[in-house]
Length: 540
Image (cartoon, rainbow, N blue to C red; front, side, top):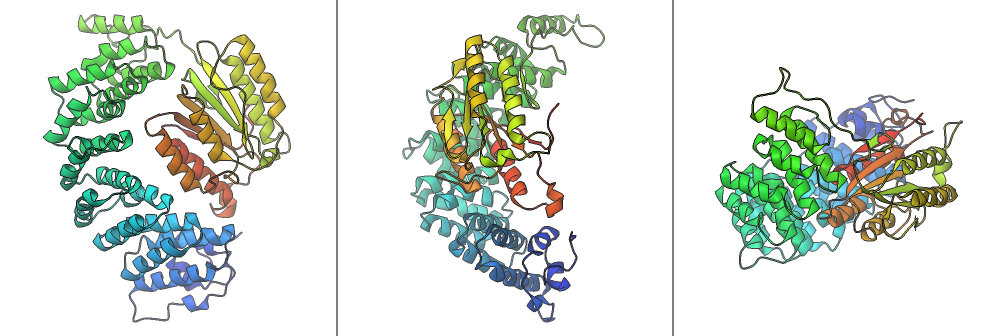
């Protein structure tokens, strides 16, 4: 096996040396005799020599559209982002406009955002505004989030009032919030509360989040008003951002209102924010949330109580009330503890404790699920664990199950109570579905799962490969659309990569389809409030 930094695949040692280790590994299999990448131009600066070597590598891989050549072009684009020269900018723009591979174009756009000086920012925004490709607009905010050029950030703020496309406008608002551009405040206020305020809940939500990140008295006044708004999106943003303001009596009073908000997502977010801020003053309101009917809210309130108090007293409100009263009266023992009164347990699904009572299991049954380790197959492991968890569910939990290959199959229309009858019926249905076949239609499955289960708050996605079927198969496109759809839904998406029988990533130098798939699954979870895990051996 070739190792990073060695001469391989016809490339000279000089060419490999000018590339980062990760790029060198990817390019090792290219097979072209690129002797032209020698450092034979001593009059050029080293950074420019590297840029030109990378462009040659890109051109050598441009005509072939198989997966390996696309990965090499992506690697070149990533590396060019670390080399801010006019030549690298020009090449990255060329890639964004002309490369036939969507993931290569996204890599180039992200690299341009990494450079993100004024010239790069102007070219990038012009490209996004003029393009009719949705994927470029949805990538813009993340691409420029690390811009370190204040002049470029200020220029971007001045463009916001001129942007007419709703998707691009939303992306620019997100970017300005990430960059904390104070000069953006007037334009954000105009979109949020001014006479030009637009009706999109997502836009108003992102404007308030951006104002909260920028900070200042005006932002705090707007967030205080948003906490009492009739619009859920505005109250949700206030619950998330209000504690970035000065924590005076008005702020605490507004947070108390949000903790008692009738909308589940709003008071759940308020509980999370109070825990992150370690606000001892709001402990009684968190204790009250332990009586809330939704399990996800109880879990969030209990986590915040642990974070604030340093105590783990479980989920029974009365136990926490006794502790709070004893603390207020100075009657705690030397350790400051009471006995654990949790009286509370939840099922497990792989390494996850199932802190949800509105959940959906989504399980891949595509052809590759036949793969195994010689003892059991992936489909065996998936079925065994799913049936075990379904058997542990109890009312008032509601659940549903989807299996998918080329298309999704639903056990039921909507969530069903976890009665003994429903658990038995679900188990019989799952057993009949465990027949690997077809491709991997992740996109259509996720969209239907979110659309057709309106009460859902937690989704577990198990898969073993990249999307290969459906209306969208490009991972970045799926991530962007799911994120947009889930922006105000807040369904927590946990992901499980079932890689039983797959060779370790290091055998491929950390690249290949397995690495791409785990990256996709990891980002899907991170962007939707969930956790990602890999399973490479059969659980006991």
